[in-house]
Image (cartoon, rainbow, N blue to C red; front, side, top):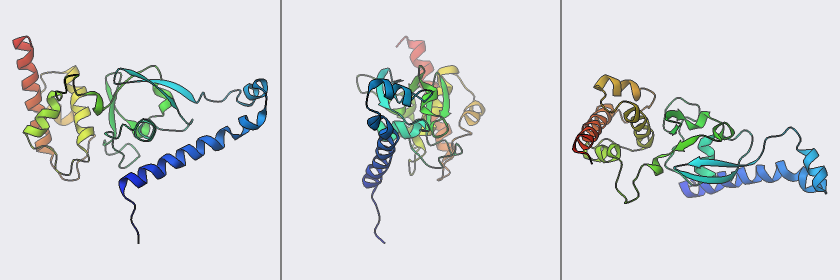
Length: 207
């Protein structure tokens, strides 16, 4: 049986989403005048919306039932947000919305308009330096297969933004919603504790 590589799969899903967009707007194309077009969509959800992602405003065409994970990956090409269980159980798709880590596969894109969305692509500084959590993951050899790593990192960043000096138990609780198929939980805990120590030292040194 022929397999489909990840790039082909991504293109296929993009095609499906695009086909849905064309089908759902077909009535508008046949409606004729702007007046009839407006009446045809009365009470419907606005499709072309603005999202604040990693400090930038992005305009994107979003279906009414489209999840944030789908928008990020297949409309905006922010593929650092991973899709795994697609039902809010594994945490691979974790992003930060208004300071809270959420499962983007369980959040409708239309519900995050006007909110500050942060993905793993937005953690790197302008000079290319990694976020302390990202660097600590490397230093502690946190990832194994790496599939859950971006979600683990986003949950850790959300924690340290609120509590820069957590206990190991605090970190354990913060990462409880992020599952690791490889069982590398201690490596992730060590990495977050290392990042917290580094952050505290930088604050102390006034960096």
